[in-house]
Length: 287
Image 1: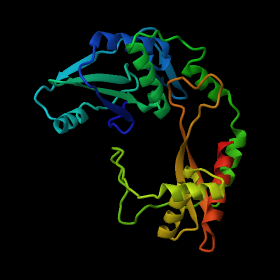
Image 2 (image 1 turned 120 degrees about the horizontal axis):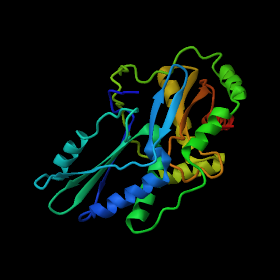
Image 3 (image 1 turned 30 degrees about the vertical axis):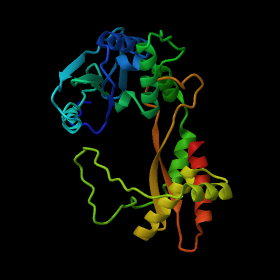
């Protein structure tokens, strides 16, 4: 509940041409907070349960930081120092900073992942823009608590049977490159590999196999990991959008679930066979 790291912070930095009207920005955020209960939420727990607590009103301070003589690189370095851990038992679970230069503003919006996913960020900034331009945001029929209530009442027994069977023959986690040791710092370190892809060839492969670019690239990654590790089973986690109820499309909240895709690989398997297996596996875990 009182995390000591920023692994689950979701910071976004936006550069503006010119200066932001702070009063309009404050009013726009007030509309957002009024519309979405999740932005007025903190959490608590006892020995048995985890609770979402919603307050009626919340005002988020907009802190203005003067960086008049800083160049963009120095501003980026400074901004990173403002991304700090959240305490889930205390409001607010988001922060807003304006870094003001001589000619333009930078806005840092930092929010905890427990109340926001990637799609939610898009919704948030879209509605913030609308409110900033003078549009009144209308409250919807549902709030995130309705989704939480549905989740808590749902029967997951069939899901449990599926995953119990899925993991019966899996003994070891999939390993990445052998010269990289997984640490426990909790800082969310990652590695990025850039690939040059011929988009026309990729599109042709998708058409021939009647699937999507994601399935092709995911299968290629699974095949590469399997060959590199010389393993006959590879497990890769991938996020799924949990907005599978009517009326939830425009809600802000944490709907994403990470599901493990378990693939069996052998040296005689063709790439087409691997793609078909991956495609079928996605359908199975998404039901």
